[in-house]
Length: 398
Image 1 (cartoon, rainbow, N blue to C red):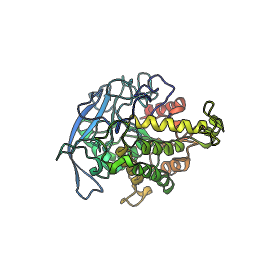
Image 2 (image 1 turned 180 degrees about the vertical axis):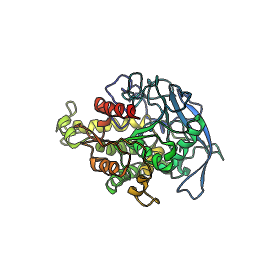
Image 3 (image 1 turned 120 degrees about the vertical axis):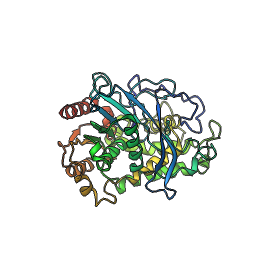
Image 4 (image 1 turned 60 degrees about the vertical axis):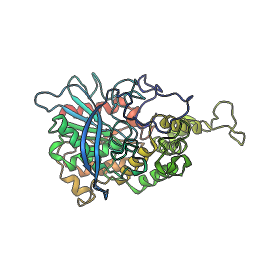
C-alpha cells in the first residue's frame, strides 16, 4: 500500500512488472510505448515560474477521461494525483499501465465520482513520468532525454498546464477539483490561481503550504537518489536494466513510505517480528518492517523514474499558496466557492492541524471532515467508506 494504490484490491495489486526481472534504469513511459488509455494534448511553450529560461518548450500533457461532458458543460470533475500517481485513476492494469487505477474506490459506476453522471478528467503532471513532458521525455533540440537538463517546476506550473488542458477540453469551469496529498495541493492552488474556473474544491490529506518538517522529511529522499552512483547526475536513460538508480530511488521510497503510515500501525502490524526464519541479529536476516519497506522501494523503482521523483518532491517543497500573495490567509480569502477539507486523524505527514489551518482560511468551507484511521496518511486510501461518504455528500450539495 502506498500513496497511490491499494494492494488488497484486484485492480491495484502487484499486477505490474514482477520483482524477478532486472529493474529498468527508468520505468518512465516513453514515446513509442503503448499509450494505454492516455490521450495527449500539446501545450506549446509553457511558462515556468522559477526557470530563468522562461518556458518549457513543446510541452505535452497526458490525460485520461471517463464519462461525457454534458451540453451545459457543468459536470466536469478534475482528479489530481499524488506524488507517484498518474492519469490512470480508474481502470485495470493493462498494456501501457503498470498498475490498476489508483483511486478506483472513489471513481466508477455507483461511486461518488461516477462517469455515468460526471465527466471525469485526470492528467499526469508536468515533470511526471507517465506521458506528460518530464525528465525522460525527448528534448526538442536533440531528441535525447531531458535528464539533468529538465527544469525546476512548481505547483503553479502544474496548474498552468492543467488550465491549458481545460481549455482544450472546452471546460470553462470545473464542478469540482479534488485529490489527495500533492493532488490536494493543486486543488488549493487552482482555487487561488483561477477561482472563476473552480466551482468547488475537496483537498484530502493535504496542506496550504509545505512546512519545514515536511521539507525535512523529503530532503533525504532527494539526497538518497542523487547519492546513488548509478544516478549519473540525472543522465542514466541509456543504462541497461539493473544499472540505473533504483537503489537510491528505493531508499527514497522507504523514507517516504514510513511517513505514509502511523507509528502505532507499524508497531501493531510488525512489532519486532522477523521475516521468515532469518535472524536479523547479526545473522543477515531482516525484521519484518525492513522487508516491507524494501518491497515498496523495489516496487516503485519498477514503475517510476528517479528524476521525476526529484522534480515532483521539489515541487511539493515549493508549495505555498500564499507565496507572493500576502500569505496563506490572504490568498485563500480570495476564493469563496464551496470547499471540503478532509484530514486523516493519524496522519503524521500532513497532520490534522494543517487541514484545520486550510479549513479556517477558506470562506466557503463546509466544515472539516476527519477520517478516523489507525493507518496514517494512507488512511485516505484504506478508509474508503468514510472518505466516499464525505465526498458524495459534498458533491451532491454543489
